[in-house]
Image (cartoon, rainbow, N blue to C red; front, side, top):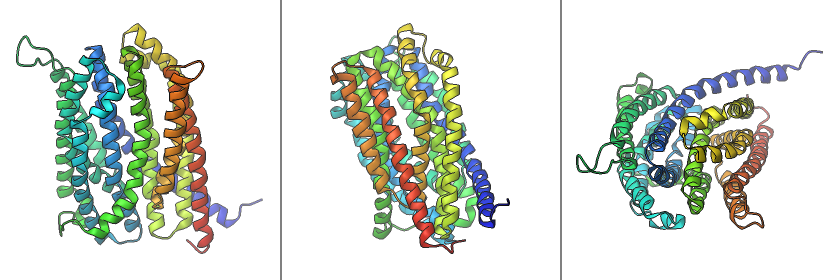
Amino acid sequence: MSLPRAAIDTRAMFVQQSRLIAGYAWPMLIAHLVSMGMPVIDTVLLGHHDTDDLAAVAVGGGIYITVILSLSGVAQAVSPIVAQLKGAGRDGELAGVLHQGFWLALLLSVPGALCLLYPDFLLELSSLEAAVDAKARAYLAMLAWGVPAVLLYRVFYAFCIAVGLPRPLMTISLFCTLIHGALASALVSVEWGGGGGAPLGVVGCGVSNALIAWLALAAGALYMRRGARLRAYRLFAGWRGPRKETQVALLRLGMPMGLSGFIEISAFTFIALFVARLGTDVVASHRIVANLAGVLYMLPLSLGLATLPCVGHAAGARDWRRARVSAVAGIAIATLVSALLGAALWLGRTALVDAYTDDPALRGICLSLIVYLVANQLCDAVQTVAAHALRGYKITFAPMLAHVTAFWGVGLLGGWWLALRSPRPMGISGFWLAMTLSLVFAAIFLGWLLWRVANSHSRASPGSR
């Protein structure tokens, strides 16, 4: 029995959109993996340098990532707006949105830098040893100098994603991470005040990260000026000051996106702060496994970011069937590859941990936590791609509420109880178990929400192409 014509057309569209998503995703995956190489480099260098420095980068790095991802999430509201304008054929309006994104990034850099320069509240939660606390503060102070560059670059990054140009991001990431590897390696062992002083250690990593942020921004500006595929948008023409209506539109979309990022990453940050009370070895082990989790997250993140413009372009063109098929294709690809990734992680767990540390105590704790990391791969992939597909529809508030419930309710509060307050406290394993359960909840809710949104648009416009 032959399939109906509509089913054949949908299948062909699914294949087409899957190829498009894969084509967008692989350069972003490389870009993200290479960028994640920077904290990996820091972790490996300090893991073989000094345990106090590794603990300082665990806590300080968690605070930094929380601040940057939260603020850059707001700035990246440029992406769904530009994607829908692009899909609607309104290319002449794209440069103006980019300019407004840059103004927003400059505004956001002020609280971002202040949070890193004055982290007292967050550091007090962790009850760090004096030596680790001092090193974490010095590390954050160095990172603060790079905040404006990081946020401005993230606007450029969001624009490239929205117009379907991920390869420049890959090239810039490769270039900057290679330089960071050489620079951080040299700075970690540089001695304060010349010969005879203490090595820079974690502070050297902070200096390198700040310098590389400005280097990446310079590379992005050069591409905007010289890149052939951006020339038609005339990105440096018609600069205007901040416009109220555009800033409001960016904030309306961006605030929930930033809060979602803050909620998700802050759960891990607060875990690191609470776990600091369990000893330096536990903090350092958590840092290693959390760092590995961050690397693995780059795959669903890349697929989510690749799905967003496909959904956004279709939504801008009011082609609701293509938008729905794009969302389904993104989730299908993410489900398959995350299952394969989880299996590979389990098989290679010992070698991975050995690459991070040669301390027997740290190795034992890390290996006991990786089982949770394997278990959460599938759900993390589904919830990430679903959230980004919803952004393509310009829906950000409901996903933010889901993340509040999942990561702060189930993950953080549930983990705090399991780890420290239950009749049989589980220690660090309690936090990781709760975070796995939080991803299950997020995947179910966001998958259901995406299904409702996609189908409601299709029913409302049955004549959509």
